[in-house]
Image (cartoon, rainbow, N blue to C red):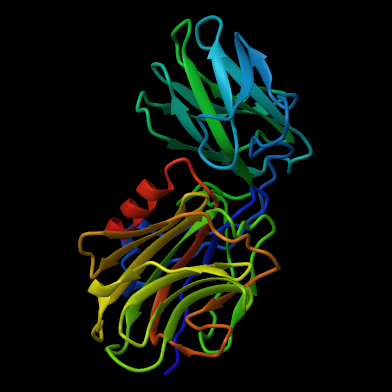
Length: 361
């Protein structure tokens, strides 16, 4: 039996290509509509990971990097008003004359609002503006439109609220030369590795992958019942026999999540997934980090069950590759349609994000 992957998503740096999917068509049974990958041209410090704030000019505010409140990575840009409607400006030059661009950013407030506004330079015509509401969770702001004919630069304005002491946080700034947002769709910067055969395919993990701290989501609609027999792999990132991160159904029918670092293995099990039937959809989220392992499982869109195993992990060493629906050691693959595979960079709320993802896709 052959298993085909309709979409593979790996989340890492802010400068890699990306893809997005139609929200009306995200059920596992329907497949995914994929945009062509694009490149982030937002320039230096778009991901807010560079030390200092030299790439952002403050107006009626102070700007600083904040390591406590961030969407992804280690820090965000904090804009604190010193008078009403303070904002930070990032300027980009060398663009296509009159070109169409999509600008996106993740934003969160600790005040009464703000907005993202893009200006065509030097004429300062407004390409577009979108408000940042007062909700305290992270929001995605997107402006798409064309520069004025003959102009080849833009100013991106990240504005805090109207209050004299309002604060707003911005992260993952993306600029792409098209009319739709892909760089801040879903959970952040992503790229597609295309359709692959589960029995033979693998791919390199992106630069920056961290085998000691991260998360992943895999969703598969099964072709067969699995209640006895050999181990069947659903997902595997492996460097060698002593360094791997895997999800598989073991010989007893348990869904198992295993992290092996430098030969130290830990494995939470989900006995409730014993003997999954043909047509069942398994949605599995996993996290790994200093506090141990956690596996979140939803079967056929049901309630998410959590299985944890605490304690320090062995250090993950080596350069791994990703295997889709199979194991690098040659065990049988878990036959079915794997509709989503995501490797996530560490996030402030990764457990909540995975839980939401497993219950909405």
